[in-house]
Image (tube, rainbow, N blue to C red; front, side, top):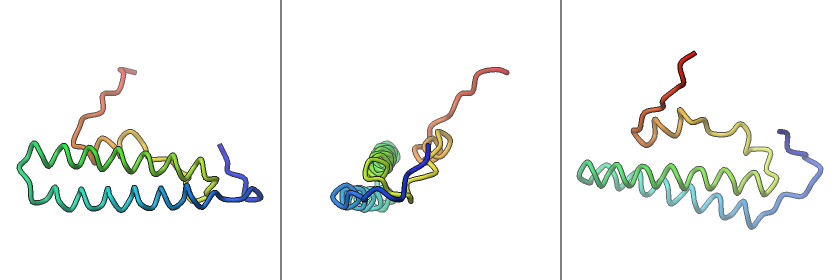
Length: 87
């Protein structure tokens, strides 16, 4: 998938993406000072917000939105395991 640079970029969606990333950063910072179960929940929510921000960037037509986050990136951020099917 490629993003056409001749289409206008939706600045409202870009602003939303920026705010979502700022909230994700804040949650990750707070997670460092919480108990393990709560910190995991904060980091997981931060990853969800980052994914939502990426979607907003794609919808806005931002060329910065590519490449997309990978399943492994999200799993690493949330502390979950990625199961790959046997080859």
